[in-house]
Length: 243
Image (cartoon, rainbow, N blue to C red; front, side):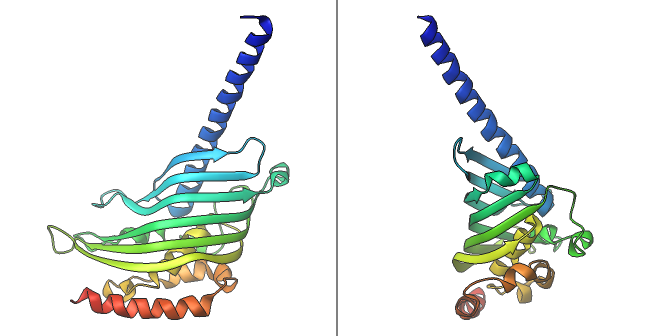
């Protein structure tokens, strides 16, 4: 092999290696950041950052239940796509112009002791007062949220759980001007769980999620239309639970 071909081959190997290292680093940092915002372990299946583009794509994100719960996955997120501003990195901030977040399923678990796994996602007292953990400044211009369903599994009676499904039907609902990942977590939980009857069935307090996400909720699009549909779905789900 000639010297020129060896140089080309070496360059390709280095390029591929850097690309893989870059994606692995993004994957690890993202899992850490989401875990800090949700207070529970998080796994990220894969991450892809374009070399010459300002787009990110994540697949198979799983927000896990706290230790001791019989169900591992609390949030199943098959895909997240992100458009970000490259120049923001030089300003020591994360500026995301657009995020599309697809939540396939939220699994709410009540264990034999009566504990709920989703209580772990509630913002801490410090977060409610605006005292977020130190991190680079974050700005999300537009968030598009899709949530397919919520599944409630009640292990309170022992043995096999009693299961109820709520089909949520949020599709690409738009929110604006979000400045923290904890706000995103509370926004997802409030928008999904408020379209179920769990607040009445198990005494789930949704106001703490609502208060945390109030700024994003004020800037949401299509509230009246989706809210009416959500009320109809919740009423039907409530009746189905006792059939």
